[in-house]
Each structure stands twice: as C-alpha cells, then as structure tokens.
Length: 480
Image (cartoon, rainbow, N blue to C red; front, side, top):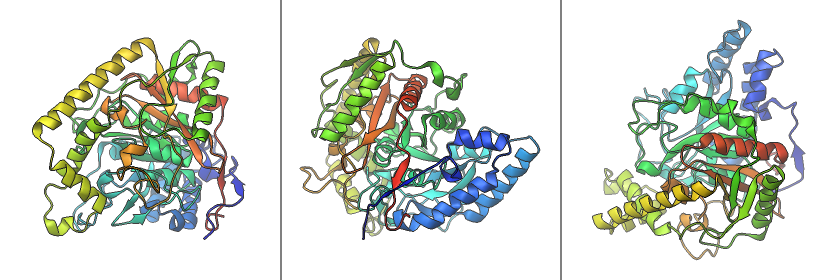
C-alpha cells in the first residue's frame, strides 16, 4: 500500500478545514450555515475514517439534527453559546450522554445506561456544539500511541504506516483530516501534545484543574483535559467554554473572569524565554532540532529575550513511572483474571510492574514530584516561558509502543519533554513548527508557569501569526 504521495492544498474555501473562529464569523454573516459545515465534516469522515480509524463511533443522524437546530438559532439571531454549530469530536474517555464510553477496552460493557455527560461534554452541549462521535484511544488511555484490543490501530494522516501518537490520537487524526473542527483530549503524560506534534495540529494541556474531569481519572493528578484544534485561537476559544468550574471535580479551579480568546493579541515582546532542546533521554533528531532552533529565533524576532539553556532538571522518568504505572494498576484493580486476559499485554506488564512498588516508593515519588514542581516555580521567577521540542523524534511505525530497535520497551522513554509538565501541572502547548526531511510534522512546546495559561496561548498565537503552519496534507492512496 502506498502511504505517501503528492500534497493536496487545503484552501479556505473548504468548509471542513475552516477554523472554529472563521466558521462562527461565517455563520454570523450568513455566508455558511452550521448544516453546511457539519455536512462537509461528515463527508470527510465518510471518505477517510476507514483509512485512519480515528472514530470508533459516528452519530451522523444526531449531528445533522443538532446542526439544523443550530441553523435555526442563527437564522433567528439567537445562538445558544460560544460554539453554536461547531462540529466537535469527543475522545472516548469522556462520558457522553446517549453514547457508550468504552475507553478502547473489551472489558467495558457497552450495553448499559449511558445517561451522563462529563463536565466538558456538558459544557460543549450547553454552548451549542455539534457532537460528531467518539474518537479512538489506547486501552484506558495508558500509552502515547493509539491502538487498542477493541478498535485496532489508528493511523497518521501524513503517512498511514505511522502512528498519530496518543493517547488522544483519534482526536488528532480527525482534526488533521478535517473530520472535526475541534476535539476533546486528555493528557496524563503528553497525550494531547504528542499527537498534536505528530499530526501537525495544536494541542493545549492547561494548568491542572482548569478543565474539570469527572469521573476522576485513575491516573489522579497527572491527568489533564484540554482542547485539540488546528489553530491557537481555536484552542483559546474552546478553553473559554470547557475551562469552567464544576463541583463534580473537587480539584477544579474557579472559573476565570477573563476569556482566553480576548487576551491573545499581546505578543511576546519583552518576555523572558528559555529555550532548551535537551532535557533527558534520547538525542533530538537533527530535523527536530533545526525546526525548534528556527522557532526560537522567531521569538527573538518578535521581541522576546531568548536564552538557550542547559537541561532544566534531572530526568524525572522514574518518578513519573511509579505514579503512572500505579494509576494503571488502580484502573484494572477491580477486574478479574478472565477480563484481564482480554486486555492490552503492554498494559498488563506495567500493572505487574506496579504490583512490586511499596507504599514508601509511591510516597517517595510523590515527594520527588513536589520538589520538581517547586524547582519549576523558581525557574519561572527568571523566565516567563520555556521552549522545547514537543517530541524529540518524528512519528514512527503504527501499532508499536516504541520505535523499532528502541532501547526500552516503554513509551515514556521517547517523550522526555512532555511528562515532566504533568508532574508539575503546568500549562503546555504544542504548535506546529516545521516538517522533517521526509515530510512529517514537528511540534514546538511552549511551557508556562502554573496558572499562566493565557500567556502560553498568547505566545503560541504570536508564533502562529509570524510563521503560519503548513496548509497541506499528503494525499495517500486512500486519502485523495
């Protein structure tokens, strides 16, 4: 099967690739209707989902009905909310009323009542979003690639032989192909940012608690929820909607009084920016290093004071692994051996490893985490922002947890720039900054101090305006 071919240009005349902000302007000006947009997005799903396996559930009938209701509201000048008529994909870990939430697992019974919405899903509904369906995830969201015993392998639109990353890989692949305008993702160690980097899209992990989560994640306070989009402006707009306090999440932050989308225009002039292209783990690919070097120079051109620095901290991989694998063990703790036998073997391996952890080892990891967070608090007394590659490598072969001939069998070893900021709970944005020599996307990560979500988004928006992302996708044999 041919996996890559000549590029097809995405033009502004293709409704499925319009940003949410542009689509809303078109609705207001009567230049496009929510029904036209939803129909175009559903057509992209019909044409391309079989190739990439981004959705495991598509409810076209309900989406079209919601789009017609939105069209009627716009016609009468009464939009329901900030996202009225915008098609949104929901990662299949968020409860969504009327649809099963299976989390990529054969152990979840689909034949039960599905009457509840997660807070983010409810907020999207209340703001008029058109809910398209559920996107794929690895089983229980445990790893940074997207394949599962239930739904198989999800593939990267840029090269069908490659992974889109994970665990929000279905959402990222859908966005890259115009099969959604916005998407919901979760990020416990990079699961929003990694697939954004691998697919040339935008992914934002807000400060922990900014987007409420319910039910609580088994991965505890590592797990964030956030927006996945094609532009930073859309990420801010989506965060305006889903970043609202909800009492179901006892760790949720109070709602912000200022909308993120209204604070994007300040630029980066005068900001103190650190650039670090080597934290720990594997060497950064030459193409990735060149692209992120160039991105750092853009920040200088925009007036920021940029300083290239040595690694910010020692590798917290062991700390992260103890906490993450313990969460995985908790996630399957209620399952008997018969059901466990149907699960991802890699997941069961880390569960077995976690069984050997002592309580003191867990408490020590928690203490190490606290020290890292304090270290980064002090770091941000000197620097407003930190720039890094999102991932040190390009997307690799689909259906694998790690690249071929990788020295470790576990996924965190190839993504050293993402999981540290789940430990510290800081906001972190992945934005496209270039392509490898063989045409695969590269992501730039922008990290801010805790609670400085608006600054991170503002910086990403400034970079995006100075260096607009690629506007093409490879036309593969099945994606013409």
